[in-house]
Length: 328
Length: 299
Image: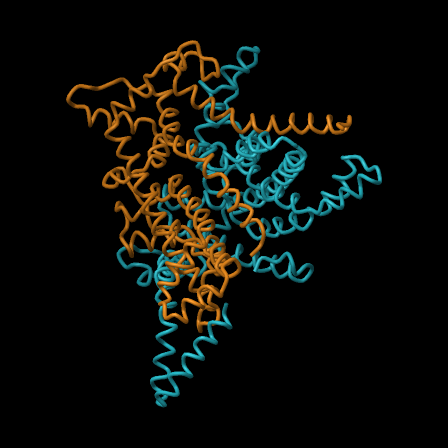
């Protein structure tokens, strides 16, 4: 589209050039063609400025001793004091560890489950069954974390939760105070995250399985390969690029966490912080509950900067080894 | 001819997929059943798929409280419709602009967009600038503007569609005929982009419908409660179920005060909150799936 568009400008300009020889008019006409495009991007640019770029300058807060009377610019500098406080506390290590480990766990579990599901759905011949399975496993993806928090609460609530009241007690077991016992939470969070996310990644994998040429399977069948062998030697290897792309995406996001999941599902239970608090939750709590601008902005800037370095580094690496799989 | 292997594969596939489907759907069934359970029974026996006593008291309570919950529901619809409309307009215009890379500066503007995916100011700075600089706290803008209106991801989906799926010849012909760029955009490009606009619009609408974070950050109980959406109310109940009761006693000083069925009413509100999604989802499913597959592959 681009070169053609230029051509039109050129011809337009030439025609007019013949009529008027003045250089000034020529420039004016060119502007007349181009200006609408700038007008079109203007609202979006303005939004980027308000929503993204002005806050970027706000990272200064992390290096200031914030005084509301004086505003950000008027507040005195404090160098790296906020960061020093943050890293001297044990919190920095815990929230970093939690953020990274959960991301790794989420990726592994979701990838395995969604590939299994995609392969099996692809085998099913009944169109209506496929549609039903797809529809139902994708449904959780459409829910907000608040609603999912309610669903989890219906199962885990200590007094009236389904697991305690209808499963453990009738079988003669002790009730479990789920929201008070941190041993269970790594599994609960990984499970809940998979519950919401598997339908989504399944669809990505299914679309790449559908894209695999049937010739491969035809040939394998003629050679007498079993279904299992076809999956192992054709489907799985050909899914590798998709897995790799998604892995690179996930690796770049290692330092970010889904605030809703870690905030809503453990219901802000203090005893669980050790295994449920990620950087995002820490930033929120330091800011909203303690109004501690110093610590929260330090943690938030720490996340932004390390996250940025990570994305750029991962993408560089990806480009080096496999140009196809880089993100930008 | 159906071989033994075919039968085994089909059975196994149906079995495993069936388990996945059941796991996905059963929590919703429980939510709905709880909302129809008698509160007293739920308190004594806990939540169950097979309650002995059903009751409409949770929904009755909601109807008594409709002034609060109905308003939140209306607000959710308003912000979803307004937000989605604005979002689609600025997203498509922006995408159309940056799809014309031959125009000076557009590459830089694309970069400005992509950069927001790599780096951000973080919650503290965003919060500070919205509250102190733009003063959106406890205004309608609080639930409309922050973070939801235009995402880099959606812009890229639309830009790629404009770039690769719309034949150049059409807009060229219009341009030669003297049509303005806006006219080309409205009359040629947009009508041809219905599928992608539907996809992006639906994903945005879902994000607005489901959003509770903006409300949590920028709306307070005192001063901002008229802008609460249903998700914000659900979030507030989660933090403190008493918020419903407090409002009830405030509103119904006249005497129509009903005792709150605390164990079941929250689930009933959640059911009301997800109802539109569940009802509309089957019709919109193909657009969602399209959005996911488009987003899954790299740009």
